[in-house]
Length: 148
Image (cartoon, rainbow, N blue to C red; front, top):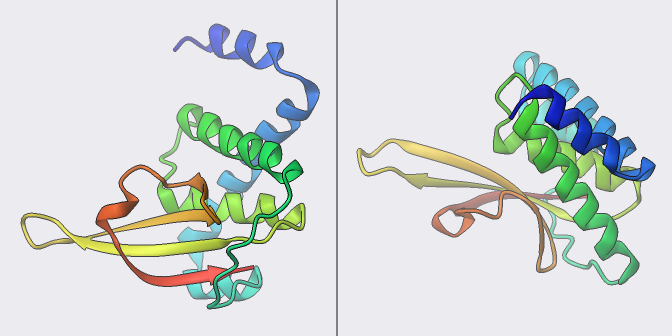
């Protein structure tokens, strides 16, 4: 998609959506750098992730926020010039939700490819609401989960 069309689409959104896009961009950039130079375990400790499930979403007013965050991360991950993998997106979602005091669970899963190689996937879920990584998560076996 041409840059001019991306900018026009961006300008049509309300200010709160624009701020979410910038926040998603910021977290995707920072987390890409942090994951390059430190381990996931170090980031998990820094961000207060614990090996627990946090399944409750509860309030209906959170649903609009969840959808907006999901949209912002999806949108930004499609237009940034670097690869935004599922772990980057899941950690960005975790940070954005945590800032809003919305608890959830980040899942890490693995699966074997046909040629016996392992592949991994990360996704964030709040009850039945997926924020990132919904596509294909069923084929992965959960090996770890972190709540906040």
